[in-house]
Image (cartoon, rainbow, N blue to C red; front, side, top):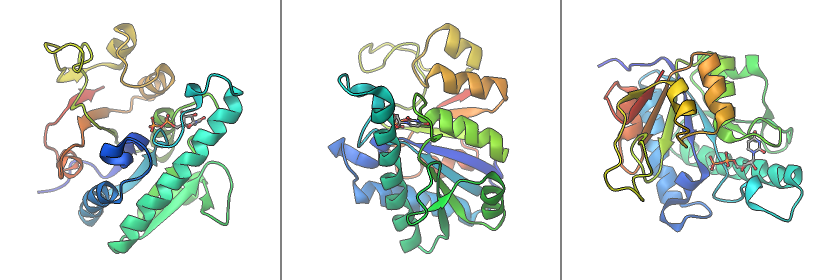
Length: 235
Ligand code: UDP
């Protein structure tokens, strides 16, 4: 079976890397994602990953700090996650490059669009870290931005604890209904809290399809790339 996509952006939230602990990094969970990323790469899919940082710090959560400073702390958290993921992938023999939106060249290379595309063409897995490099943005917006820049066919928004987009929070509303397909306009007009509105608008304006699916399972990332219908499709 051929993979459904040639070039993807996989968005992994910080929370997803924390596993059951909720904070920090659970190396078993990171290995589980890395294993699937390796399988995807081995199928010839040009794979890039945008990592979040919520397992360490979220800028908006600190009420008594300057927001921009707090956001920079959040961006630094994403770099730690990127390194953990890189380490797990390299232990499996996958060639990776971490790229940072904020320059720190002793740690990883700076994000340069043409270089990123070249890495993908050479079969290297890229891990985009440092968000967009700007405060007041999110790593979901980063996923949308990078997907547009590198001309990815799809964004895979892998979610922990939920398997798609619902019309209400399924944890609070037991009869919440899951959407099979949805438009970006509906996400905005129904105020569905799946991504922030900046990320949603960017995807909508650039016509980047999105799949929202659960990753509390050992093969969903791989299955989605191979074309299995999981979660919610957004166009
Ligand atoms: N962040 C930022 N600019 C960006 C991306 C991220 O300022 O372009 C900061 C922001 O404070 C955010 C934190 O980094 O709360 C971690 O990212 P995010 O909350 O998106 O991570 P996730 O929820 O996916 O783990």
